[in-house]
Image (cartoon, rainbow, N blue to C red; front, side, top):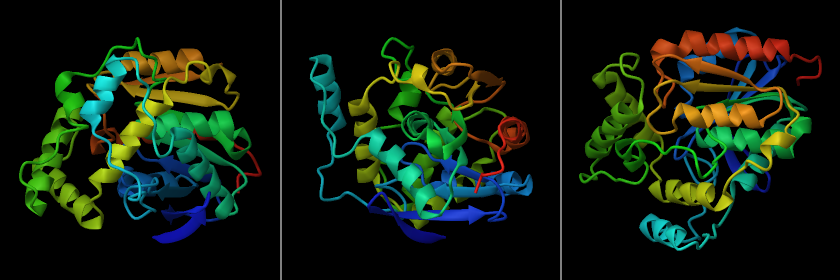
Length: 300
């Protein structure tokens, strides 16, 4: 892993694969570090002939924190929204998209295939819309246009975004993460409870910064809907979504695909709101096919 200055901030990133191969930028979701894109999946993608780049979004992991800014009280934010009061945020999703594009610039990469999951999908959409010159293709995974009329996630899944562990010990935090994963993830395709627990411990030991997750969540809310912007995207786009996603229902993926001109929609059966080992091969196949269909000699 390494640090680099991009878009004026410090970004932690990791590369896998041949540096002369076409670049594939993977953008993580809300509160998720670069390891939110599993290392095994990144290695599989690299083995298909790509320079795979994962990074910590701002305010999370080992990238630059914005702790000089207040931690939002999300209960107050939602109360204001009900009163029609739009929140303000220290940064917006557009800034996070500029971070992603800036990282490519800092690494000397002209163009890349860009894929993001959940909040990362929102960021990927904005990279394609605002920085199309950096994109060979875009893939929006288990994400949304943020249209207000779309069906919400289940109450249990939505609660995972804002609840904190009652037991704030290392082990208590890990157990809380496992519980959340089992609520939002893909039944029957996940790793074992023991493996999920070890992954949670590794995530916590690498970095634990819930304040940054709260500010990222505020950025999502403050940035609002992209329904006006998505029809302007010209980058070749694939929208990939699970058919049983409890946090961001499949209707959100369908809506995103309908808004982006010529976007393809791929639905993965049995997939919730995660990238579990049981789905690696299928998702990899879709990623590779989409990238190969939109390959270019000036990828790096």
